[in-house]
Image (cartoon, rainbow, N blue to C red; front, side, top):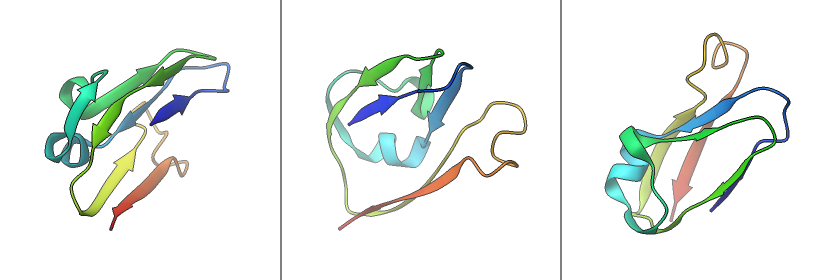
Length: 74
């Protein structure tokens, strides 16, 4: 997975259940999160486990502004 922050401010991709249940081959997601500085890209290789997982940006008020998502692995 490639995480691209095209914004001029920092964001993260937080999905602790998703990352905990996946087999990570390269890269890392400490505490179930990928932290991205402005205009930064990070990659992680993993084998996901089937299921539905919640994801969000944990920065102050970002989830309240709609920065939430759902991961579905079939």
